[in-house]
Length: 130
Image (tube, rainbow, N blue to C red; front, top):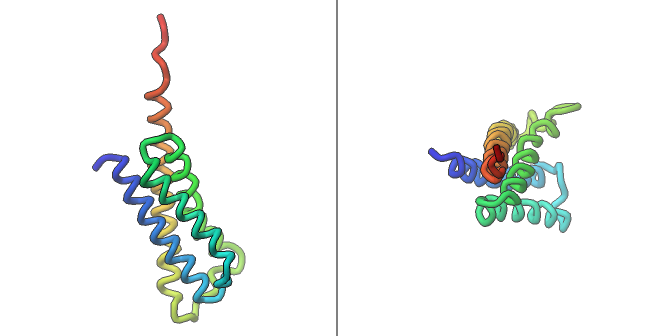
């Protein structure tokens, strides 16, 4: 499978998992359910636009790289310090699973987008003159 297709699929999966994770944060009481969530929606829309509309441009790859870093950072944010904090909650299993899945898809997205950015830079570099 081509790297660009892998990056698109990985980014879409990360966007889905991030939206599920934000929903879980609200349901489990870690985040409020008010208008402050519009910022999260805006971030996911930018990540989606970078993935689908700008995938063939350097700006799209940078957006996907940043979104992948955010996705990979979710487990670090939630598992540092006192830990996850939902061990006895009814939604703990799915919450922890989404953290692991975000860590995997986010890290894989960082690797793929960094490779794509490096390849794009190599292609645009003019040939050296003798």
